[in-house]
Image 1 (tube, rainbow, N blue to C red):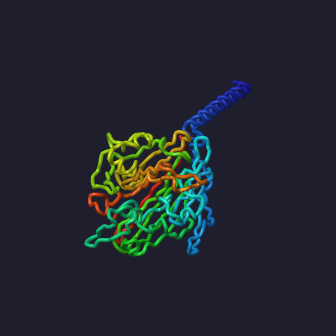
Image 2 (cartoon, rainbow, N blue to C red):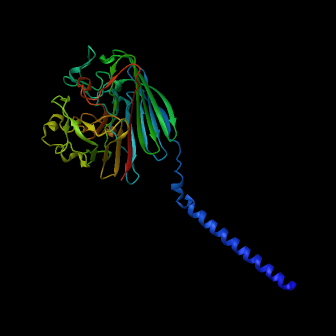
Image 3 (tube, rainbow, N blue to C red):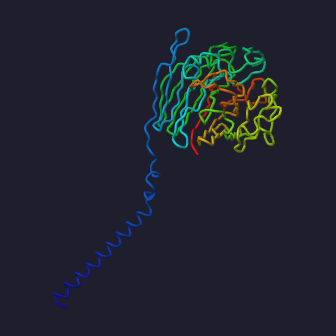
Length: 402
């Protein structure tokens, strides 16, 4: 073989090797693309990063004794916000979007602080020490009987004459990733409203980037006592009018039926075949005027639903949707019950936001709680709190659209 032939052979070999190397590199590159999750849309590869929700503080008014009260606005960058005052921990407003992105206030209340100083049906307030009713204003712990202020027929309601809803709470700003918070603290002294023990209570409101208002409750005591605390906001997802067309689902197969004074009888009633069956979404107004004896006693819905909970985890308690605006509210809690109340005793007496008269069924409540009158019913989940124990509970109100 001559020199020229050798040169051509060498060149051919180099060309073949280069071709094989290029094909191999291309194949490797193709395989790497198939195996890389980056094929997925960028939005699913990394969670959208939103600005941290914020809290701002402004003066709200003064008590007759001159004590200043403030209003705190918790808001996220989407426009969702909750305004809360340290007087009674009252939720003054919640602005949530409808299906078209329009924001409305979806809770009942007043435009100014003076409205909350007058007698009102616990609009937006923290109810305690014992939310809901205690029969005849008394209960026993051990061998001692404790007597409470009677303010609801023969019974004690929502803590008595001056419950948590009428106290000025100490407030401070708190935060965590993707949430802004308002921490409220109150020391309920031994004997206040007839309840035993110095009770240290902390309630923290959070607004998240997921359009949630989360409420965390915590308490300790130096003497055995009873505790049942909730928030008493009245919702109207349409922003105005009645709530009869709202579609309600409650994750409960049973209720605790009541007597004519709305005190539980101690029994448990299956909701199947009754006006209380909200296991599937049903318009609130569909059966609200039913002649079932329980409906007659409550003048509509004012009953504790026994949630289908399987443990202490936070679980879905109720889902409400409003067909016109498309707003949806999900309520989740670790409490064993939820009081569903449809504003049956609103009669137009209260002139609310914008001068609107709140008439019967202008709003509904979903009060996450232990059962009413539990201290007088040993078969109900206990509400006793002892020294050395810590009461903790969480409720989440999440706002969405269809």
